[in-house]
Length: 130
Image (tube, rainbow, N blue to C red):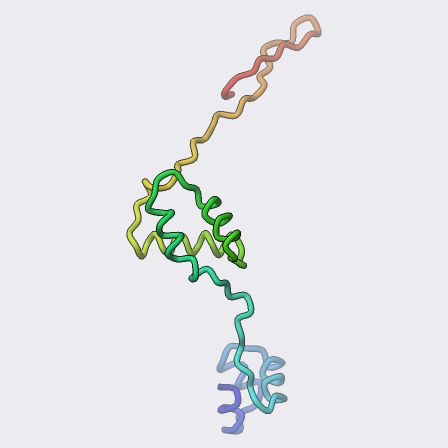
């Protein structure tokens, strides 16, 4: 688009305002003879494991992290966030209910409660909540 506007004789400032980019960015485009399309070097190979992920999602007793660890052993090269997002995408597009997921029960965290401070001695007790 920058090259088309440059061919029309518009200034760098005007092109920048029209496209919502800085004039310095426009200047960089002006200096390039051929605009190289952007590549996506961070693409992952997660699509290869779609069938495996779906089969695991349709069974009870799995966690997302277990699936990620399994596909890593099989050659997955991406990150956890990409894998979680792809699992959510598969869940929505294949209408898999969340009931199949292992619900992680929140265990109450024991905490220490101060009972009293009599005679210079502090008494503490362990409790499940405050």
